[in-house]
Image 1 (cartoon, rainbow, N blue to C red):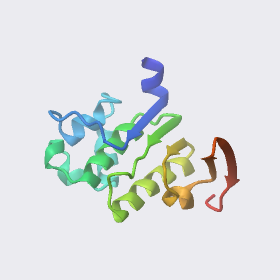
Image 2: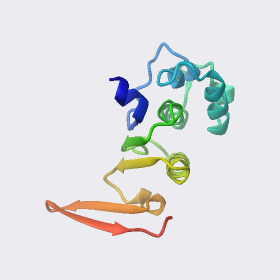
Image 3: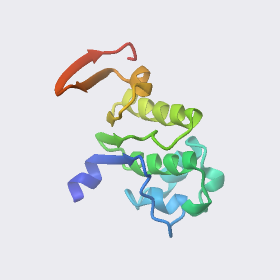
Image 4: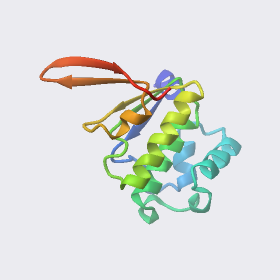
Length: 142
């Protein structure tokens, strides 16, 4: 559990936020001693004015950005994202993919699993499973 908490961040399609914790408290779950960093990250993700709200008062995009804050705050080596844009409108989906791409550019590793190809423009490598066979492609995003 401790290794996973320190080295792997998770972003899920259904957000998995604790409903009785605020945006800020949900973000701090992964790194409870990083309050100042949490506030800066929430500002960067456009959530500083929502940091004291509970998840039921948030839009889907705000919920997903809160989940991203929770994943990014401990600065893990790896972020696993399972359909992170599945419940989002195109504008919020693009924002989420850009935040994940920015994390990869800054030195982290991000693995996104999705049924669509919308995220391909943000990827440095794409692997498709078709009819039981893996196909790997280097992409133009670098």
